[in-house]
Amino acid sequence: MKKIVFLLLLISTVLLTATAAAQDTLQLTALGTYAHGAFEEGASEIAAYDPAGKLVFVVNGDSETIDILDISDPTTLVLKGQIDVTAIGASPNSVAVYNGIVAVAIEADPKQDPGVVGFYKTDGTLLSSVVVGALPDMVAFTPDGNKVLTADEGEPSDDYTVDPVGSISIIDISAGVETATVQTVNFEGVTLDAAVRVYGPNATPAQDMEPEYIAVSPDSSTAYVTLQEANALGVIDLASGTVSAIIPFGYKDYSLPGNELDAGKDDGKVNIANWPIFGIYEPDSIAAYTAGDQLYLVTANEGDTRDYDGYSEEGELGETAIDAAFPGLDALLTEDAILGLTVLTSTGDTDADGDLDQLYIPGSRSFSIWTPDGTQVYDSGADFEKITAEAYPEDFNSSNNKNGDFDGRSDNKGPEPEGLALGVINERTYAFIGLERIGGVMVYDITDPKGVTFVTYANNRDFSGDAEAGTADDLGPEGLLFIPAADSPNGANLLVVANEISGTTTIYQIQ
Image (cartoon, rainbow, N blue to C red):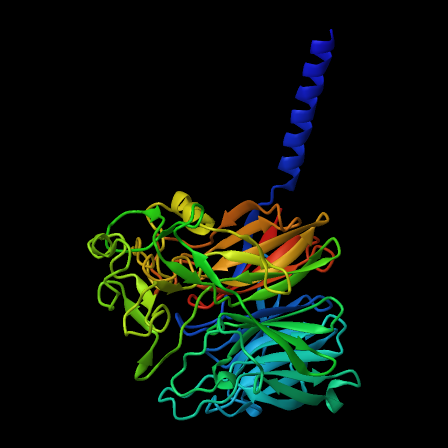
């Protein structure tokens, strides 16, 4: 009798566990899409949402406007208007919305000159503008709404004759945007860890720090900034306007189990394997969340290198000088599955003799979770390539501007995670990560950062269509935006994806 009772309890427990797992499973369904403009012209890059008006504001780099979409019916997106930013600057790069105020980061022409942040009403009326650092690439409100921050990338001119410092601009709007004040913080004089990458030709460390994206602590006291090319995290004290730290992210060891990758495009097959190389995380997007009492940072590890006229950090495996003592060199240089892999020529010469003793590649083809001191607590390893290979075996590691490109990106950053958004659903925290190349969105449950689980993958791309003709649907997801059910027009959790290559904005319902 005791055995029967035990078995019944065991069966009951299994059923309850299965039910709980099923309840936690999410599904993304594409509801509606709006096409903004020309193919491969950046007509849909970053999106922000105003819940009061049910409006989505989208950066349109093609028309140099902010497109205002009415999503009252998320199955039918309607262009309500456009904000022409050229009255105060050259081209918009990013947009954010808070309590009916629209902030737009606008670069100058030339982009090495100081940029501008314009403040608008949601109907597009200009309220005020302020000057910020060179090439403001991302804009964000602090959670308390008292400050607006920009990541001023400060990229050099193509001929490298002008190279502004990278910076973070802190705009105080606590007394209103009409009386906003600006403090711009750069990295001059900051002591750097030796692992922070400084490789620009003739560049100072401050010029080589190129802020990409910003996350802010929930108490609005600290900004965490990805310094992408430097492979580092900048920590900014917002009260004092000072740089607290620059923390190197380190490297990913692709020789370890769980860190496999497809390293070549010329072998004609999916070949996800370990190789004696290292990945440089170089994250693009970053977001912050709390689990328990601990703050965590989530990054999409795209990878990006310095590449200007007459200067590049990149070479190809098979055409780059490697030390003869490199383990297994002869076999490596005759392996079709890895020849042609993009490697960094600026990193890996450990004895300064002009050849590479270690091999490094841009990006890590993953997303990661970190503590604010730069300790990695989770990395998705080889997940993205394994999942996309199973989902699209005939279109694995495709590029984002054409179909029929099987394995085309395996030698250079693979699926290339870039955009990132976090959302809380039923008291669980989810990460949504956009894959810039093959497309689509990866979803992970990150409620417990030390017990992360993959949830689903959705891709609104038609691999049978013609990319340039606009029949391939969404290509090149750039910016992701989570809209919680309490704020959404249809009472459901939504995900907005801005697709840079196809110039489309698509809304998913999260079921």
